[in-house]
Amino acid sequence: MRDEKLASLVGMVQALSRGFLMRREFSKMMERRESIYAIQYNVRSFMNVKTWPWMKLYFKIKPLLQSAETEKELANMKENYEKMKTDLAKALSTKKQMEEKLVSLTQEKNDLSLQVASVSKQLPLYGHIYIHMNTHTYKHICG
Image 1 (cartoon, one colour):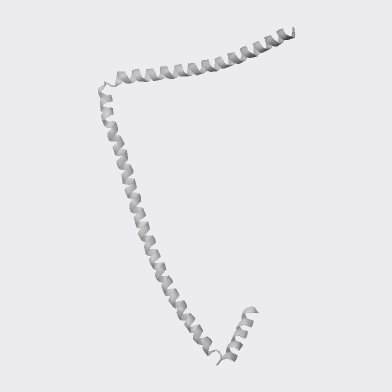
Image 2 (spheres, rainbow, N blue to C red):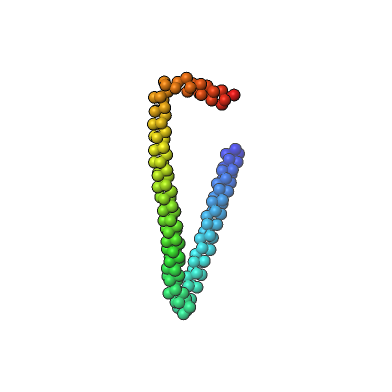
């Protein structure tokens, strides 16, 4: 009795799983069938209209439309190139101005360093005045 019950349960599980797999396979077959019908319908429609004069005209014009689109893209690229070219020229001129300013500021710094060096050489002569001025300035700044 136990073996009979087990055999019937195993048989039922097998039947259910086989049914599930077959239903899934059937739905895939139906999708393929519908796809084939759609492709056949489109091919039949194309075969009917390919000899019509307006379709022949469309086939001749379509490559020209693509070349017109390419022309537009080329014009946009040229426009972008010109814009980038002017931006580059502006950036280069700004760079040149900044380099000139750097050179002038470096020269000014060097001149001021020379002045500080010459004043520091004269410092022993005027040390007490310098110390007095520094302490006064320090007191004035710090409070």
